[in-house]
Length: 141
Image (tube, rainbow, N blue to C red; front, top):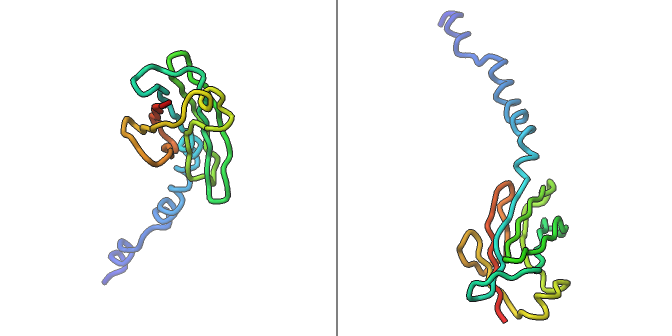
């Protein structure tokens, strides 16, 4: 094998550096946006009418605990929307109607059903970090 053939088979240092460094550079600028999460939806009674003045809480979770990020209240037709930046280190964003500290809910209703992206779920309520998730809550008396 001559020296020309041997040199053409060796990877160049510039290619190796690009392969190793590029992922670090490309994720730096996107990290802030990838943790921004939006949840929206409607709180209704079973039967369809919107429920006003119900608090909806956004909380980030990790193994060592939870932090509240945002509390919004439904409008006169039962709609709400919220956008949060989930801190690094937190792997889950939950969107819930808290039973305590939510006067209208505790006085009038005894339970709820949760729909994520229009599908009923028994698990409450991780939202997609870095995306949009629809959460609809149906309350019953």
